[in-house]
Image (cartoon, rainbow, N blue to C red; front, side, top):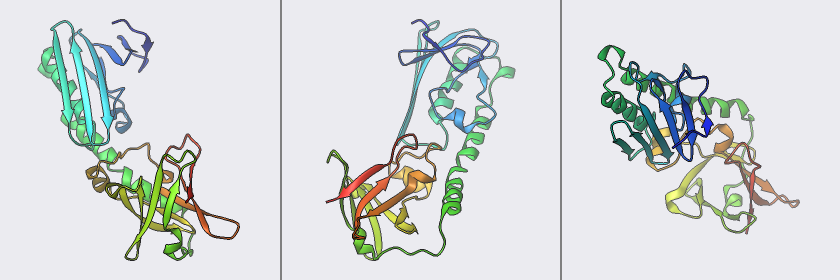
Length: 252
C-alpha cells in the first residue's frame, strides 16, 4: 500500500493517507481520522519513540460507537478496538496507540502518558455543553413569548417529501419527533419569538444514541417556525450543518 496524500504535516517521518488507510512511520502522530486532535489544543503526541516500525491505521466515530484498527506489517499484527458508546474522548484511539507502543517495545522511559492525555481530552470535551449554553444565551432576545403551543403542532415535510418532522404537544410541553419516531422525540424549549431549542445535557444525548461533538454549535440546536402571510405557522426551519443552507420543512 503506497502513500497518495500527505497529511498532518510537517512531520519528520512519513504520515500519509490512501484509500481509507493512514500510514505512519514511527515515531509519529496518530488520531488524524478521529476525535482526539480537536480535544487537544496542544496537539497530538508523538508515539513510538525509539522505534521505526510502519503502522497502517483507520478510525471510526459514529453515534454510539468508536473504532480503531491498526496493522503492523513488520510483526504481522492486527489491532482492533471497538467501543459501544460515545466516550468523552476517542478512547478507541488511545487504546490502539497504547497497544502499538507495547507491540513495538517502546522503552519504558519513552512511553507516552496516555492516561494524562485521555484526562486532558475529557476536560476539553466537558466544555462543550456550557459553551453551547453560553452561545445560546448571548443570542437570545429578551421578553418574547411563543404563540399558543397548539399552533406549532403538525407534520412538516422536506421538499422531496422523504423526511418528516412531527411536532406534538404532550401535556404543556412541545416536542419534535424526527421521522415521527418516538425514539427520536426531544422536548422543544422556547428560546425567543417562534424559535425553540432542543439541547439536552450531553449524557442524555449520548445515552440516546445522538452524536455529540464540537462540530455542533448553538445553531444546530435551534428550531425556528415560519408563518404564512395570514400569520399561521406553516414552516419548520432547521440548520443541521452550518456549511449548508437551512432545511425548510412545510406543514402538511
